[in-house]
Length: 372
Image (tube, rainbow, N blue to C red; front, side, top):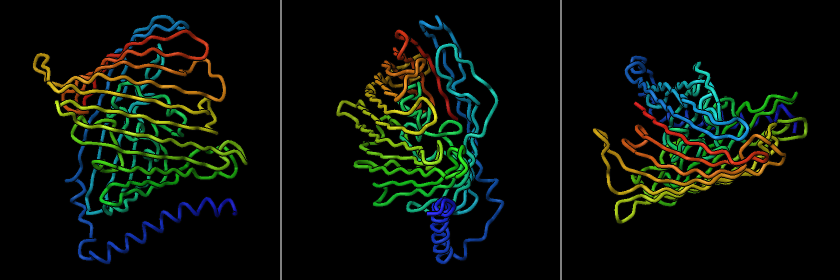
């Protein structure tokens, strides 16, 4: 197939779906299609999210380090001034979640998400702009809705321009009363070859117990849902590295969570990844496994009241080429103090990490996150 024709096929297929559903909705509800622009201003919601941490590391190559980090500093803006139209605009600091001993942060703000939305309901929704491309649960949960502190490096082979985001258009929705969720989009991806192919990304997840609503996910619901969800995601771009050499990534992920008869909450999460053509040292395969248990009782610390969640996570990344300074396996032992779900949480996390060429790196993180 002609290169330009193949490139346009994905874009026009998504636009055709948009047009078809739009016409159906308009035909059914002609009397309500006129926009009341005054509703836009009154429906704007704003929010703030902040994650800060103290990090102590003992690295054989760097020595002992002590750092205070602004892991994330987010501003959220959302509006829905019409039945089916909406917009989302979020910002975060550049170089958020710096990794490694002695890492410093750059404080300037960058556009995180800039999405125009046509929301038809459960079956079909169209997003266009800068967004998280369909990928794994960790990416769709983001740092605030993880069940640990440090973001998993096992998923770093996925393409992104900033924190998992890329510019493009996506269709997502659900069928069978939300039990099956899908997302399919086309994105800029790599831009290194004359063919300039688009990147295709998709995700399919099946909710076997309670339904996880919406495009974004969480790595724990703190016992408010009983979850068994299986997910598969892929990203592919032809001629991404060079003419005839493609970028190809996929993963499987699983989340299981259930309240116990004693009032606690058991959570199991796992993911397997495969990456090729990433134009980095992240070609290879990787996985992580996480288990946590939320204690049934609440504990007070001064005026604060929360529940305690011990957790353990193992990560491993087998790369095709030697990458001397990058983690190949690690064990994380942590404990959360959950005050108000994902909106107010304290975390202590100890990690031991191995690379191909250095001795074990020990690190301790003390973190706090708040969202308003």
